Image 1 (spheres, rainbow, N blue to C red):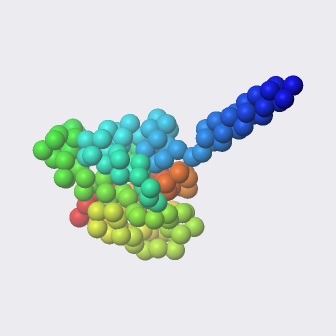
Image 2 (image 1 turned 90 degrees about the vertical axis):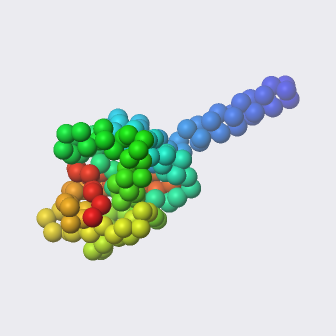
Length: 163
């Protein structure tokens, strides 16, 4: 009887642990890959060697361009950026989408600019919706506050390009 109770308690504890572990939020990379609309971004992160960085402790705020956003770039741009000889250029493009810290939508609307993980600054505009970008173009924020275990993702409709 005692063995049966112990086994039942151990099983219950294990199930609680497994259930809790599966309920924990995924990191930024896992969340983006799981969404299915960030395949180009995931490939670019891999080519730039930034997957481990964005799976790290953080926190990070990522303005994540969708596959459709990457498709808006001039023909051949993505293919060119993914070449090994353009790794540093690709890193610069990707890091301009990352802001250290957690910046939720309620915080973004109070800002006019943010310093990115690559050291550049992006402009933030709240006229007619929230936009983020550089003098080379602004992206519309289309979805906000996708919380992850190491930060937050805001979805954007265009790739931000460095100055």
